[in-house]
Image 1 (cartoon, helix red, strand yellow):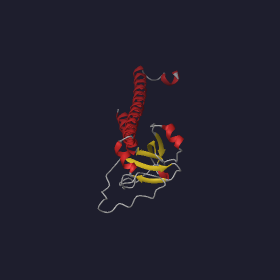
Image 2 (cartoon, rainbow, N blue to C red):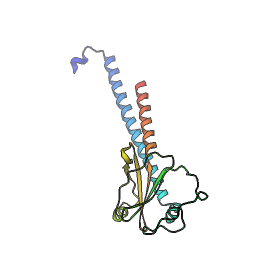
Image 3 (cartoon, helix red, strand yellow):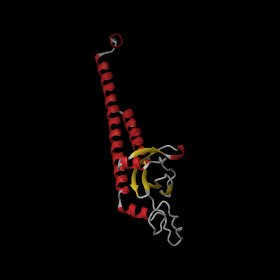
Length: 188
């Protein structure tokens, strides 16, 4: 190594060392910033999931699955279809909600009308749903699409509800931050 550095002046060696140290510091700080931001955004998504899954509004909506007035019961026939006068336009939502019976049959799903993706939700037993509690977990997108979803499950009478949120926005933000940090690092 000293043979490589021998013809270089002290100034050149110092500049090379400083460039290497600055590059390493920029790389390390960029990775740390991106990791911390991703962690923060996931925690925020998890809080939103848990809050939504435990909201009284969701509980009220689930007890009258399908828009009717009868409570949800896996053995009962579905509620009558909603008429055109009852139907309201779909509102945008970050959440995908799936109602599943104890036998694993999907009773209903509710998703953002503008979403093009859905989560690949696993079929869980009552014991698995109970053991998970309100701990969010990650699943891939359905049908082999790119992306992932955060999911919270909650037991209800006759089955369970799964509430999911697409992580595309989290990935887009962290990817953009990586591009910006790379551009800044190259500029410096």
